[in-house]
Image (cartoon, rainbow, N blue to C red):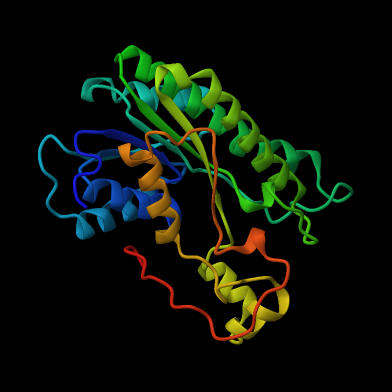
Length: 279
């Protein structure tokens, strides 16, 4: 299908890489305009150059823009949202920015500084995006809107590897996303949480080493025998952003290759993974 988001204006946080960048590419290919937000201006410059390479022919009035934004600061989020007023306001919000700090540990070892930093970005940042997304939609009298918040499968199940601040933050995202879905249902503003499973990233590859697939099966439950790819998450976001999901709201949309449903994981070679657009 093409033009699933034709004429829509989207804002994506954490857009300079990974799921955010893959989603940007898909949204643009489906006819949306996108404002890419990230904390790093150099990363945004590299990302938008890649976007223009992959989506070279934007059709007027379609656009892609970038803006530096610290999502933990409400003034930054509000200013980014207000910059869309000249384009008719927001239709789709993807609150994707988040951190998992290297010093995040268990209840004993995690410092208050790391706890507060994680909650400020992962919880307050998503709240600010939701708040100012709704205000933009109301300001421009939108008949419908879609807001997607990145949570995680760790908000749904426990893990013996401690990352307490991160897990707590993603549980909060699930809870308030459900509540916002109910509060704004009669405005036809839909709220859903994306719950990714572990993603195949360079950092993860470095940690696993050369014996990647063997360690997949030995150390973690992977029903499909592999980690997920960013493009697989982006495709889920595209569905939640489009009118195809018009009756989907308040959901914990899990994209984890079956990991949260696994009691015993089967043996065998891994399934084939799709290719990301960006890498």
